[in-house]
Image (tube, rainbow, N blue to C red; front, side):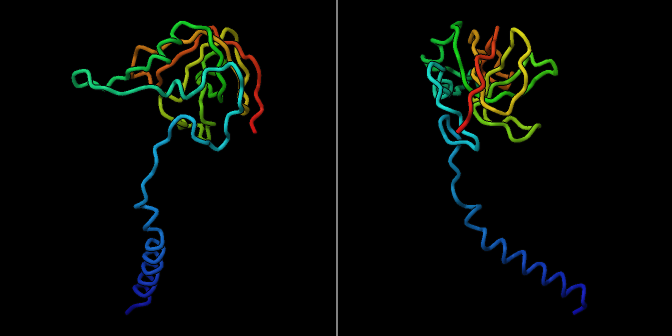
Amino acid sequence: MSRRLAVLAFVFSLSAAALAGKAEAFTEERVPWQPGMDTLFPLPEVEGVVPWDVLGEVEMIFEGIDLVPTFGDSVKALEGQDVRMVGFLMPLDSMGSRLLLSLISPNCPFCLPGGPETLVELEARKPIGMTTEAVVVAGRFDIVDDPRAGYYYRMTDVTLVETAATQ
């Protein structure tokens, strides 16, 4: 056996041994993320805010060939109401007037940290400065009518209430 083939055989045997040890990691069942599960940087407990669990009351149904969200009564009751929410900010423009509020602390500048029920589009009354801390915002809550938007909820006329320290 040539030296090159011997090296390749050795590397292959190491790789196979490493993968054999990790085989159970590939077969274990993954629990899908649900509102209320712990995240890397959990949100602080804040009184008087809409709980993210409420926004998770969404069921996907087929209308013809389209898969569309249907919202629970708790979510529908928020439509048009002035509410407060706590979450992490992600910019959508360079001015700080359009942002996303996220249940989950973003850890990648190119990835959304959760599903559409974990995000709220914010249209700020005046620009909001960026922070990595959790914030409390106030504004008018609406359900987004376009299921292709990538998120289900929008708040308009948003103001920053406070920066909430995370535990």
